[in-house]
Length: 367
Image 1 (cartoon, one colour):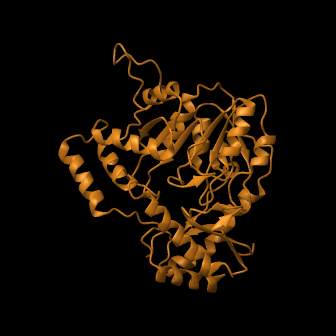
Image 2 (cartoon, one colour; image 1 turned 45 degrees about the vertical axis):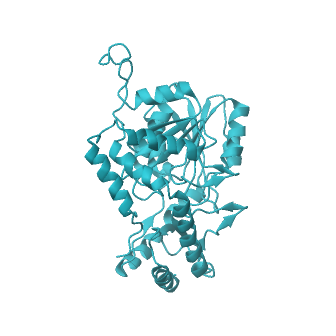
């Protein structure tokens, strides 16, 4: 079986983890945590960084730290991971969903601007799959309307938009270090900001809001969303080769594009779109023939030992949104189309060119 992704853990990664374990600092204190946070600040060009237990935890804390009121609106993409929606509704906020662009798969910025009301307090900008979202433009919209920009760059660490690192433009920016990300610590995430006030709030929320005078007299509802020194050792060692990882991911994506671009029955994203580089966090394809569902092709590929992964299921079609009786006034044709006819292919940095060629040959015969 060729896995959809296989993290690359080098010998030096393993040694770094071993040294962290041997040091005895195995939990949420330790020198490696400070070093990793400093490396992330330098990479993303932000003043403050807080490591947390997952990308989902990062989103939840980031939104909580903004001190928004019940039923305040957050504009967010309809085509994204469920974590984005859950972070909004857990704080009793109202999600306003925006459909995605059919080519970039990111949410439509023009629709974002049209959807701002007096109740809008933040825009959640999520970079989806390969092309980064134009967060520079979104920040201008946020400044004009005096609202927050939450930048979810979970899939884009090390990539750039408008000559700035993804995560640079958000008032708060979040990252994930899950196993399929460019840098992995198994689980884990990070929140970055330029606001000392927000950073203090974030660090308190991730650590159960311990009291300042009496440690065990807690001032707010917080979380045990801490990061470990062991994980930090792994992340710190991997971030040293982030440029090399990005180059390899782009090379994998370009190889797929070369073998699949002439198939008129599928859409595969180009290496560049509107002069924006595709980082190919995953290599996704979209079936043009609506008589063929993605799941049907995925099952056939699995028989050949090729693992795939379905695209995100749109937020407006989630079971949880129906249970909570959330109402959305718009239609989302692009998001729903992608969820039915899109999936992504094996794209780990260690995949061989001959494997990619074989996968594409199978795919071109099936579709």
